[in-house]
Amino acid sequence: MNDVPVGRLMSTELVTVGPETTAAAAAERMLETGVNSILVVDDAGRLEGILTGWDFVRLVRENDPHDRTLVGECMTTEVVTASRNDSVEALSDLADGEYGHLPVTDDDGVVVGMLSTTDLTEHLARR
Image (cartoon, rainbow, N blue to C red):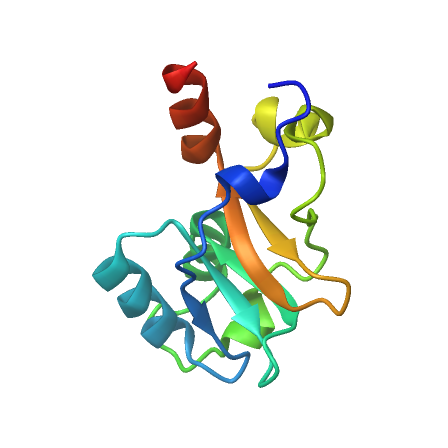
């Protein structure tokens, strides 16, 4: 994977919600689109957080799953990101299984893609 830029492997069909979306609506969107995480962005597309399956596990454990909790209240806010020019080789946290999804942002924090362990696996399979 030496010198392969993130921009070459990332997905650009992004599933996003705003922080004022209810967790229930976000879960429905994730089920409809078949994704395991959903990006939380502001009106300009800048990343505010990420909502993952683990966030939903925590939400259900701590609350009534049918309440009106907003995404902004349960999303992960300290999100590790990459830029499209980063080398995939440098992304050891993703390769080590610490993260399943890595949002790709531009210099202004606008989400331009998502790199997943599936993207990396498909790349390695083609080699």
